[in-house]
Each structure stands twice: as C-alpha cells, then as structure tokens.
Image (tube, rainbow, N blue to C red; front, side, top):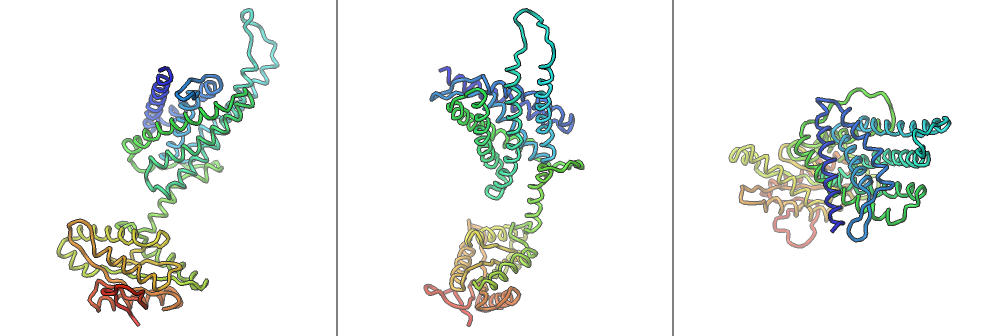
Amino acid sequence: MSEFKNILLLACDALIYFVVLAALFRGRKRFGLGLFFCALGVMHFIETYLASIFYVSLPLGIATSPGSAVLFTGKVLMLLLVYIREDASVVRQPIYGLLIGNFLMVALGFVMRQHDLVALTPGRTTDFGFLDEMGALMVWGTTLLYLDCLMIILIYERTRNWFGGNALLRIGLSGAAVLTFDQIGFWSGLHLLTGAPVSVLVGGWIAKMGAIAFYTPLMAGYLAWFERSGTEQARPRRLADVFEMLTYRERYEDLLARSGRDALTGALDRGQLESEGRRIVDNAALAGRPASLLLIDIDHFKEFNDRFGHAAGDQVLKRITQDIVATVRSTDPVFRYGGEEFVVICDAMPSSTALALGERIRRQIAAGTGSGPRVTASVGLATCAEDAPDYSSLFMVADKRLYQAKAAGRNCVVGSRATGGDTVRLVLAG
C-alpha cells in the first residue's frame, strides 16, 4: 500500500511543479522571464540533493528519487516549452547560468577550504566531503542538462517530419529519448561518486518514463489552451553558439515548407514544380532511368463552381488532393499546377506502371466520398525518356495527352501504352 501512496505523492509533486512553473511562464509577458528562470534555477540544488540520497519505493521493487523523476524531468520539459514558445537563444540563458553558478560554487568551495575555521558549537564542523560530492554532481548534472536541451530540441524538430503539428507525440517521444540518455549519464556519475547500484539506473529510468507520460499531456494541453497566439518576436541576439544556430530553426523550416505549398490544398505549388519537378526529371534522364509525369485535370470544374459555389469547389479541391496523395507513393511529389490541375512526378516509374497509377487516381476521384456532389478527372501522362528527353518537352507531351483525354469524353487516362486488363475507361495514345 505504501508503494501506491508513493506513486500518488509523486503525481502530486509533478502536478504542483507543473502548475506553478507553467503559471510563471504564462505570465512572462507581464512580469518577464526572470521569475520563471529564478524558480527553475532555485530547484536545481534540491533536484541534485534528492537524486543522490532521497529514494522512495514503488511497486515491483522499483526505487526512485522525486528529485530525478519529478523535478529534473519537469525541468527538461519546461526548457523545451521555452524553446517552443520563445527560441533557443532564450533556452541557453538558464543553462549557462546554472553551469557558471555550479563551477563558481566548486571554485569558491576550494578557496574556502583554505580558511582557518572556528567551530560555532562543539562538534559542529563543515562537511567538505558533502560539499565536494554535491558540487561534482551538480556540475555533472548541469553538463548533462546542456546536452539534454540540445538533444530534445533537435529530436523535437526531427519528429516534425513524422508527426507534423501533433505536440503530444513530439513532446512524448523527444522526452523519452532524452531522459533515457540522461538517466544513463547521471547514474554513471552517481555510481562513481556514491556506488549507486544498477537497480537505481533501472528504477530511475522507469520512473522518468512515467513522469514523461504524466507531463506530456499537461504540456500539450497547456500549448493548446494557453499558447495559441503567434510566435513571439525575438530580441536581437549577439552571442553566437550552438543554441544560436538552433534559434528559430523550426520556425524557419515551417515557413520554408509553407512558402512552397498551395495554401488551399497543401500540395506543392507551381514554383516547386518548376524547381523540384524539373530536378527529378533531369536527374532521371541523366541516370538513364524512367520518370513519369501525370497531369490531372478536374472535368467541368467551372460548371461545378457555378452550380454549387466556390466553397464547395474548394472542398472538392482539398478532397482530390488527399485522394491523389493517398494513391501515389510516399516519394512521389504532388503539385497544384493551376486552378483545377494537378501534377504528379514519379521517379523511377516506367510508363506501364504510371498508366496503372493514373487509372487508380481516376477511379479514386470518381468514387468520391460521402453523399455530396461528385466530379471526375482526366489524366494525361508521359514518361522520360520514352516520350521526351527533358522536363519541358515531357510536360508538353503530358499536356497534349490530357487534351486527348478530354476529347475522348473525359474521365479517362491517356498514356503511351497499355498495361493489360480492363481498359474500358483507358484511352491509349500512339
């Protein structure tokens, strides 16, 4: 029963820690970040002290320290929160402050050893051994914190490619990876100084993973409910270091990604087609491998807009983009070329395979979703170097075949050769 009581108390510790520090961070616009950073820094000594001597029992024979599982894990995630809402140059301020302060403590402790001491009361003397142990652990812990912050920012950015804007998954995965590294690193130092057994490593890791599972939804909820405003403007920065290179990197990548995408559909825009599309075809031509270009046009889309309205037309464009992306390979870029025209470029795809892909896209679009109005699409495709030797001429061939598809009654695919099987709605160009 006492083990479950300890779990409940650890959860209370974590909740109090998060609520207070999140409130201080939320009030940064009114009071500045000084309150938040001071509170974060004051906790550093107690974190290290508890992690070195104060352990509680959990179920399954696990022993852990609130200093490590609750306070240090919370600190790492709070610094990630600073990066998400501010930037890396702000994150470095408390880390460098802690590093300098800890080294200063060790240096002053060495000087103070040289004093001639006077006992205030009999038997009460300075424990320099404890001071040395804590100083070493605090310097080592802050060094790990420095590495932790670099790693959690980089992993958080990397997971953007996997999970997009899902803060819950990105924070959870980043925190789990970094706190695993940190647990191994801190236990190694603790083992050298105090002889901490392997059970401390295992128990501490399990407890930190539990803390990550507890803190992550709190952070994701905080970001969703209290930090919806736009990115804060950064003050001019002068000190150049690794955090400087990380500053606004995610925001820059987000801007870069959005600047090359169509605002309505999310497909790559025409500018990206001219650069990326041309690069894919030219590289394929140089390497002697095929590359197919599919030009897709929604049939009678102007009439659709006139009948159902542009809002319904926008929804159709979004849905068709999703249909195309879901049908092609993950490596095949999808571009919005014009109002109702899309382009797919498939590297290393011969004409027969591209023809079958075009037919699958056509059928998916014609099938539609739900009970709303449906549309069809015509597809023209061409393959390098079978139909043309370069991007410009390849696009012209695909455009010509698209008009052939329209002339053949629309809702069909025109390519250079057949793949066999059912070709009732498949028109072949010579």
